[in-house]
Image 1 (cartoon, rainbow, N blue to C red):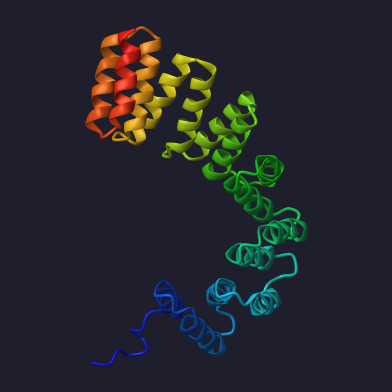
Image 2: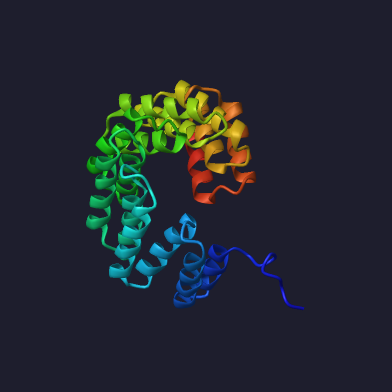
Length: 258
């Protein structure tokens, strides 16, 4: 039975399905047809930019960025961010970062540009490039747990532990249900050899992710350092039950036996 137009999936869904089948050209055609009918479909335009870049047609991707920009206010960072994503898909990372920085310039109060650039630099391991961008994003109002976590991780790599702890604590407050920033706090405490703070942090991680084996091993480390050997033994057993690697479990038990 034929599917009516009203029941057909959105063009973006169809294009993504084609892309997952490595049929990017057909996906591009679907999006171009959709944009021809609905020029203000921003989601279709953004996906078209990415598929064009992924297929290697950066000239066409740039043209579509220009078309997207005409539909948005002049100080909207999204066209530049989309261009950055396109460059990333083309493995042109310097150009991608320059696009994110341009997004930061055209929208000087918007955190999106520096946040995107900072998050990408952190992912690429460029910590010295990531830190000022992430700090600028936070100054502009980015208060989400992921941004704070990335900044904390960058500061840990720079061995700036006081600042890393500050970022992780802000991230934990911004995302009360998330475990990542508490895990960052645990990492800082372990590096400093502060078993009491590590135990508090690992307890917070496990309150949110009870089956996280590495968290149970971290908790065991802290309890061992604090001389709470029976609790440490129970924590190691729990880690093993949760599927912790046998070598890590053996190491924790060896530490406990010293």
